[in-house]
Image (cartoon, rainbow, N blue to C red; front, side, top):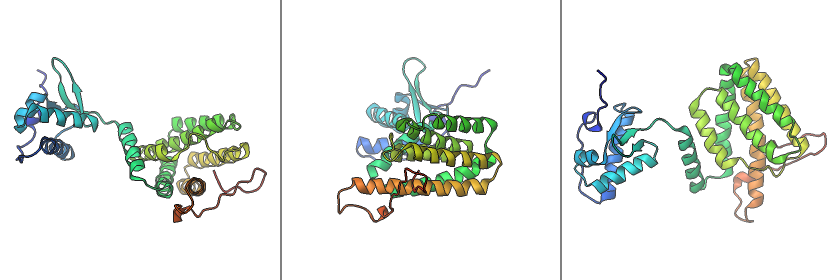
Length: 274
């Protein structure tokens, strides 16, 4: 006999709710469910209950229960099914939802380009190190494909910019650390341009060469070397992004983090951006 899923009321002890505005009561319900998740009393797929069951369990109106369920759904905590046999269940994890939400909050908070790039540097350096330790043949094949695609599109600025982002994300994915991947996706939403304004065929060529060198280090499992090369690479990207941001900002509002000077060489000399 298959065991029937148990509603939230059978899993959690009662909580004292304090009278107040419906928004406050709804927040208390949301906190109750969140605490149960962190305490491992709930897991993906567990039944939370219907709107009526929520209202009865917490001693609130259906309006309050509905508001709590809708908020849990918007937060990605609950999935709600309508009709017979419907109700709320604990959602399966959706890292993409978290990544997009974090990107929005970072943007609304007004974090600086320098702050974003410093965080990206920390994430990408560790990702490169772990990729050298954990990358599979499939991961390496994907990285090779992205490099080949980039080399075939050196004169297409938009495509080259996109492939650069995809390569960096593929390195993070090769680390097989989902936390690093989600964080990088969030930061790329905020920091990676759709079209790199400083991109030229020579710059694209140099980026492809750096990516090829990084892939070679990953393939021979040189974790320290991969981390060092990624660190140098992202520092160059940081310099360019901070400088571009300073040029866009009105005079007098530029941050102290925008001191880096962008130096682009379209010939065969050194280049200080990626």
